[in-house]
Structures are given as structure tokens and as C-alpha cells.
Image 1: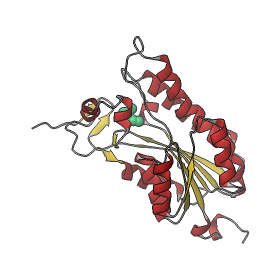
Image 2: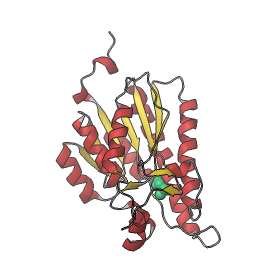
Image 3: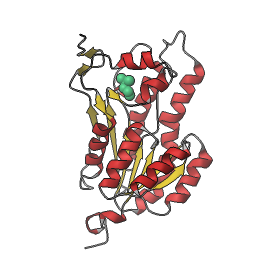
Length: 257
Ligand code: 8X3
């Protein structure tokens, strides 16, 4: 049997997770490490990725995915072979309607959710091909499937994440790489809503008010780990995942005392 996915020990497999400093990224790094991967934890906040990498026996790389030089340094650190890339870095900034929103927030969202993801992917593609069975997993959102008021900058960017995933699947169809996208709905993490509302805890809490069990970062990390550990001929193109209470973006079961 040729040297490949089936007979390479798990301890030999490497994964990169971007945006690994908190939330879904940090949880995914932990889950993949528990599965046996050596995880390269990449994020802007050095202290956080260093603490995480030392906790899980991984490698920390300080990286802003919107910086071409940071991404080049990440690729250098990864070296010639990579099994899994989880493009998780992203986020929402602001919630104003188009009539009032800030152009810089739109630009930042497109930069991190779309251009950053493409820069990291482009830089790590040769190493993913060299693995003989690479996986690119893009963290999209249900915001990449629907529209909602006050969300144009974010929904447009996350629709971008979805379209880039489809494009990559077409462009790489004859390469030993699969491209998967996970599209989570309501996930309660420490930072997502807080960042969106510029630190306004009350507004952030209101997103989840009365919802018994929003998804957690661990729920998403568990799903991502399942997707990337399927045999390499199995491509989970896209997986939409929501809490049971969220039947649709605007139809959320909330219970107040
Ligand atoms: C997050 C989902 O509903 O806040 O990606 O847009 S939502």
C-alpha cells in the first residue's frame, strides 16, 4: 500500500486552525489535538495562542490573516506538508442598517472573512496537496445563507465565505484536497456578539436572551472534528448546524419567566 492517509499514524498529522485564540477556533484546536493532530494555533493574540498551544502540545503562531507577511510566515512555519486547514478566523463588526453603517466595518468584515481566508488557503495549498489527502474546512455561517436587517456587511461577507468554498471545490477537483464548509447558526461564545456590539454586554446578552441552549463552541468543534476525520474520499460539502431552538434566523424559541 502506498504511503498515504490510510497508513499514516494520527500522531503524524498536522492541522492549522486560524482564529484559535478563543471561541470556535480554540475549541476546535483542543478537539483536534485530542484526536491526535499536532495543531498549529494561529491568531493575532500571542499570549492566548501560546497558552493554548502549551496546553494541547501544539505550536503557536502569531498571525493576522489579513496580513500577507504574517500569512507567509505561517506557511513557512507549517513547512512542506499539512493535513488539515481550518479557516476559522472571522467575525462581525457592527449591526447597523446599510443606510447608517460604517464603510470601514464592511471593509474589515470582507478582509477577515473572505480575503484573509483566501490568503491563508493560497499560502498553504502546496502543503495540503503534498499531504496526499488534504482537507480545507471553512467556517461560514447561516448568515451566509440568508439575509437579516442590520447584517448586510456580515451576511455579504459570509456569503463570500460560502462562494469561495464552492469555487475552491471546483478549482481543486483533480487535486487530493477536499473542501468543506460548516455554517453555524446561534452559537454562544465569549466574544462573537461582544465584538459585534463593540463591548456592549447588554446588547450581546440580548442575542441569546431566553434561549435555553444556544450551541456552544464545543458543539461546533465536535462537528468540525467529525467532518475532517471522515475517510478522505468522503467530502461533507456543507453542514448547517443550529440549536434546536432556532428553527430559522428570525424564528427562535425564547422563554422568559
Ligand atoms: C453567526 C450567526 O445569526 O449571528 O455567524 O449571523 S448570526
